[in-house]
Length: 294
Image 1 (cartoon, one colour):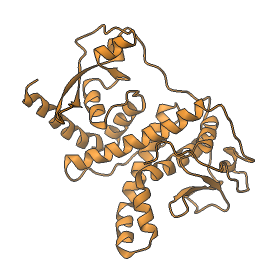
Image 2 (cartoon, one colour):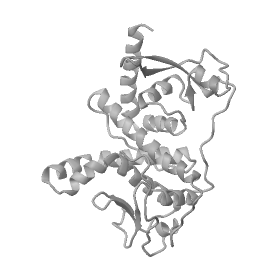
Image 3 (cartoon, rainbow, N blue to C red):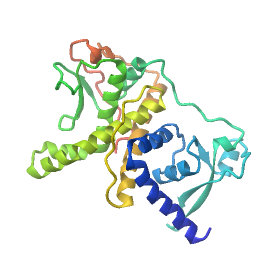
Image 4 (cartoon, rainbow, N blue to C red):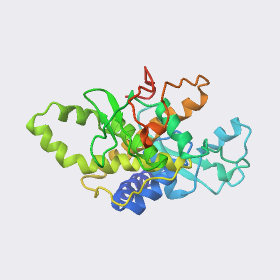
């Protein structure tokens, strides 16, 4: 491919990141795509794939599909991705979605209701969870505490969907904002000012991750009505989407690994009921999984 085509691919990504962060509807559409996407490719390539086929679920090269005994049936349904070459340069790579083959996409695990999903989140968090009373504040039922390295959860959620939304938001804070929150905890004036400025952005990003993970597993997602307006250079906006994407994948890995784990350790009181009205503080797990933490 000529160099000008590679430039077109990069330019398309630059325009698209601003579009995806421009308003809540655009962001929800892209998050819904990410939630249903199986392939382990970069966020940049997910943006490109979405541009070619917003319903794509799993992409591979023609050779990759054939290695699995699957045939590409529509060679016109080309999806261009960007790959890094051995010499350090970059070039285009031709991919095909599963919809262009004689196979069907694998479904993600589904949960019978939000209660079962909340149980999975409680059993397989990225850091220890501690139930406590009384509520943190009237409107705050869960909180990641970086200085303690735990997520605190209280009763008072109206339903199990809200338990899921609250836990996922704090999981997202753990993966997205831990360093900034730890800096704020040191109580210097500079970091306090920065934290106040970033609080809205942090909340929106955590809500976006919660929305995508719930969508992936068939749980009613939380509302996502506002976004942080795009600002800065395209690479800065791409970094925001990369952060959301990585947090979604890390949390999903915890959930999926929990499905594979046949050991069902359940501590006393370790149920979603503790977050929807039962009293008493419990420690769900003595040791949290560390997979995917970085």
